[in-house]
View 1 (cartoon, rainbow, N blue to C red):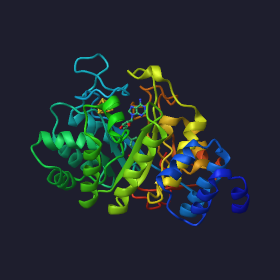
View 2 (spheres, protein in one colour):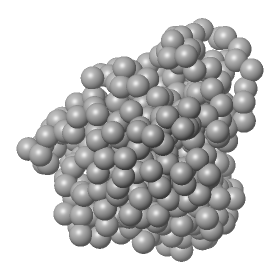
View 3 (cartoon, rainbow, N blue to C red):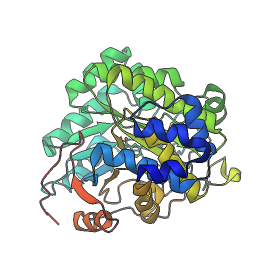
View 4 (tube, helix red, strand yellow):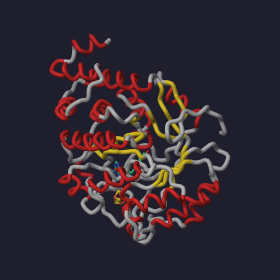
Amino acid sequence: MIETIIKNAGNLEHIVNKVYNGERLAFDDGVALYNSNNLSLLASLALFVKRRASGNKVFFNRNFHIEPTNICVFGCKFCSYRRKKGDKDAWDFDIPEMLDICRKYVGKGITEVHIVGGVHPRRDLHFYGELIREIKTILPNAHIKGFTAVELDYMIRNAGYGIEQGLKLLKEYGLNSIPGGGAEIFNEDIRRKICGDKAPSQLWLQIHEAAHNAGLPSNASMLYGHVETYEHRIDHLDRLRQLQDKTSGFNAFIPLKYKNVNNSMSSIGEINTAEVMKNFAVCRLYLDNIAHIKSYWPMLGKDTAQMALYFGADDVDGTIDDSTKIYSMAGSEETSPSITVSEMIKFISSTGFTPIERDSLYNEIDTLFYE
Ligand code: V47
Ligand code: SF4
């Protein structure tokens, strides 16, 4: 197979050889891949690398989200979710309300609670710490993956701690890992344009590094398909690859396609599906040290999420149970994202891949049905 790929590679032949030999791609190689329109080559290469890493497996988990509030002190231009206190569609849950959400999942085999929301002006580390501690009394076996680096920065400062001490305290409260959000695009000029008031790139990376050093693994993401260039995307992937070389703390990478409904960047539109697929392939090829690439179905929609499996993704995230609004508010066709475990198994196996239930650290789980 590889001989045929090389024959059709044109000016990318040297990159094909590097991929085949397991050599690291250089910055310019990444940009050259983005500039190529040879989608079938990109798919073949990305699938080759994905298969070398995880065979035919595609992972999913059993999870739900808690979004504590959509009130936020920041004003990211791409955000369709943020509201001001008093707006009719603002919400701001207290701890008992969030624990009521958790009680619905007792006995359902949930392995992960994903907590992410707006950056509330008054909530601090201890509020969220108490929330984590109480969730663990209701769902003692659930892994809590919570709070973007942007939320962490604010809640830790609000409680008067430094990053290391704050993360240590959150771990003691029961936090298990950190999701990938808040990364957006690391290039400082683009970041200033789309989300200039929140944690700068260097701080995002510093918080993830400190988390890894504290024994809290994390995910990483990239918000793409807006005003950034291919060079900005490779710069973003490169900064992640460098940090991963240092810490090995990233479990998964999630490319997040910019959705343009109801936010102040709407006029720039959305990129097409071919561009989304190209991006999956390049991310898989460039990020040679992050094991899992997530095709996040609540944002992409089910059909596109399946297609991304042929472009190097090996994970589709979880069952969700209609518990997240971030993407439906930004225009995702999945307006109430929810999928049962048996539907998830069909969703993955219908692509020819082998569905594997996992926990948040990618340990494989024997699927038991509770539905
Ligand atoms: O940082 C916000 C993105 C992120 C839009 O770790 C948008 O497993 C597209 O953290 N169009 C938060 N994207 C989501 C997040 C996440 C999601 C899935 C899995 C994981 C994980 C983490 O959502 C934000 C931002 O990049 N986002 N608005 C938008 N209009
Ligand atoms: Fe706030 Fe997050 Fe929306 Fe930015 S993306 S405005 S930090 S909720």
